[in-house]
Structures are given as C-alpha cells and as structure tokens.
Length: 321
Image (cartoon, rainbow, N blue to C red; front, side, top):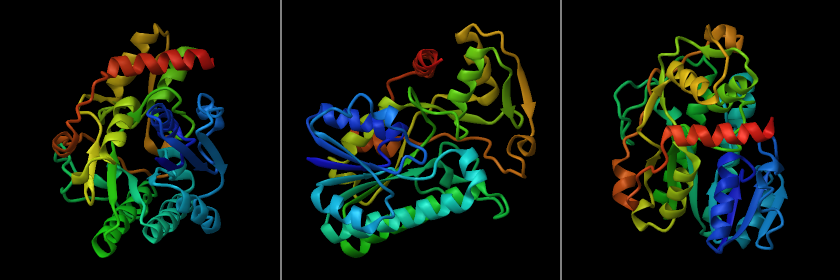
C-alpha cells in the first residue's frame, strides 16, 4: 500500500515509517518540522519507497494531493508535550482541531481508511483505574491550559467517529498512553528523556509536583506493532482503542530507577508545578489503560519491559551526548 503518515517526522511517526517500509509498503510523510525532526528519519530518508513532504496538514491543497494518492492514513500530526501545551495553548488548539478537520474531511472525500492518534489525556482526572474506553471524563478548570490539549483531542475523536457514523468512513481512534523509546525528545516536557539526560550529565533531576503521580511507560515498538495490526482488523473500525502497558511506576520511582541504571551521581529535587511551568497547573495522579479491547481485537500484549525501555533510551542518549 501507499501509506500517508501525518506528523511522521516525530518520535512515534518515524518508528512507524520504519516498520511500514520494512513490511514492503510505500510511505509518504508530511510534517512541518515544528516539533518533529529530519534526524528521526535518517534511517529511511534514502529508501526509494519513502517520500518526505515538508508542509503543515492545514494546507488543503497539499493535503488534497497527498490523500488522493494514498491508500491509508495514519494521522499523528499534533501539538505534543506538556511544556509545549502550557506555553502555546493557541498553537495546540489550532493544530489539533483544524489539522484534523482538514485531514478527516479529505479522507472522507476520497474514501481513505484513517487511524487517528488520540491520547490518555482525554481521561482527565479520573482516578478509576484501569481506564476503559467508555469511562466518563473528568477535566479541570479551563484556566488550566493543559486541559486544552485533552479537549482538542476529544474533538478529534468526536469528529472521526461522526464521519464513521454519518458517512461510513473507516476510522480508528487510538488513545496512546505514555509512549517512550529512542529518539524521543525531552524539549517539550517528556519526562523519561529529560530525566535520562540529566542523569547522564550528573545534573539534579527535577521532579514536578510530589512525585507520587504514577504512569505506565510503553515501548514505542509495542505501540507501533499495534498500529500496524489495527488497520488490518475489521473489528477496530469505528472504535476507540487504548494502546499502552499496565506496568506502573511513580515519577519519583522513575527518577530513582534512572539514577541507578545510569550509575549517576545526580540528586533529586522537587518543584511545584507553578515553579516548573511558571503558571498554575493541574495534573492527573494516575494513568493506567484497560487493554482488554485491544487484546481482544489483535491479541495485543506489550512485550518490552520498563527496564528494557529505559536501557534503550539511556543507550540512545549516550550516543547523542
């Protein structure tokens, strides 16, 4: 197939590009490089079955041409990272909502199956774990800009499912939980690469909030494996599907584990959210997926442990240093 990946120069998109090319598909990536990087695509850029287009997904003319020529769309383009979301809420809302409007409208026009990337952020402050796809959503006040990301991705989900319901468009919505691995940047607030970089430099690791908040960090290879299988699963069409792992760790525990694995002399310090982000911030205390649906659809079970994943990130960051 000829596969189009929006946001394909990003962390997940670049790994997905490699997997699809290895499976024999042709891949076109469209990315404006606002948060992605051509360095992420270094391993595929010379592949004759790969094409890169530097453009925003909001450019209707370009996207019309690209979607007309493709067989399948992975829509990954979005504003990502807590730091970016807090600093640039207008960019977050416009990119996530308008970009998805353009891509979904054209996917519907040309009848192209589309997998839309969403996020566990849509569960908000729900503390009923594990999070099931049909659980209620509990969001904080609109004065906390971090919830703009959750709301924008919820609109993406509603729009994708509406196209499926009204027009029969083959849409799949995947809610990614914390996904980590080589090539992820810490610039926009991703905690694992940020902690690893500081540990390798012997710098103090800054923990935002109490450190008691827990997360489940899934290896990018497990996530990409699910994405490849879900588009070939008829039962996934019209569904919202969690993708992640249930291996949980607190942020404070994560810092300790990274210090131990790197043999670092780094200490730890706690910052209030206001100190970290320069404004009031609202966070979720727990985030764990119910993987029953994705397991039932494609037999998905994460295969890479947190320790293996952290070692991959540590090895990658050592080469960058």
